[in-house]
Image (tube, rainbow, N blue to C red; front, top):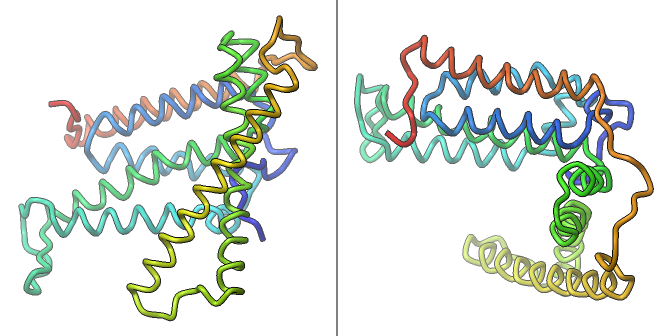
Length: 265
């Protein structure tokens, strides 16, 4: 099954009926609340709220995990690295030579892992519940953004899924030519770098062809017209309110628990 993060999962999902701008507002305000403070309480509150709102996306936890497992793995690795290298404060939990973990370092690692997931999930929700054309219509009609910015956002979302498919195709092609890794760590790293370079070349070529095609078809020339109108509804009010409420709850919980630690102080 393709893990295309650029395609909406279910056309009947509640979030699919919301305007992309309301979802952008909700995702943005929640993200700001998480990154303002380096603590685990605010991140845990936001992450819990996001998981509770998952039914609005119309996807099961299992299917969502299949799509975002690299992000979960990255958050776990980041948390482990932080716990290993952070300042050792509090009671010692594990002392195994170079692997020294204390209450303070483990708490810092948990905070980093939770914050990583809490920041990533709103973006994933937005991608899975938003049609790229709807986003472009909203940016152009409601925010009156320049056509180049609007088209860039549209093509970026359209090409995100194609890059994932291209990565798999490059891997299959390299294995068919016998260029795959032989199992050693050095060979695997070399193969990954080679495949990444191939993907970069393909992305540049595809973007160049797309830019030339858009220019030839007159995109951005003259006054813009719209095939469908971008509108707001009651769902958008609920989405924006839920985002603001979740952000406020996270800040309030962190301050009440005494863990609020403003990033810039």
